[in-house]
Image (cartoon, rainbow, N blue to C red; front, top):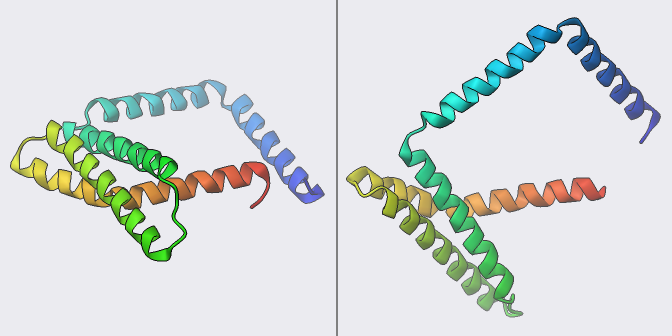
Length: 140
């Protein structure tokens, strides 16, 4: 690390320690109230939120699994067909998972949105994950 970065990190750490030392009980109380708020929000979340989150999770896992075990072809046209097939499989799985939990008229709309958004969710998660890995390895 450079001298400037080391100095900034040291000053920031000193500021955090000073903040905690000066406001210890109030600081812990604010952290505790933040945790309580997060738990209340998660417990009061509607079933539709959990259905979409579960469908995104399983859709992303299916896409990752299929991309891992289906080798990437050399031909450009075949590569595009592979990407289309993988995205359709992930979207279908996400739709099915969400639809099995929400069997209403609104549920079909939510399921369609979850299914159609899964390729974008997967690519966003893959990009974020690769950026974190590159940052940890010092490549970025």
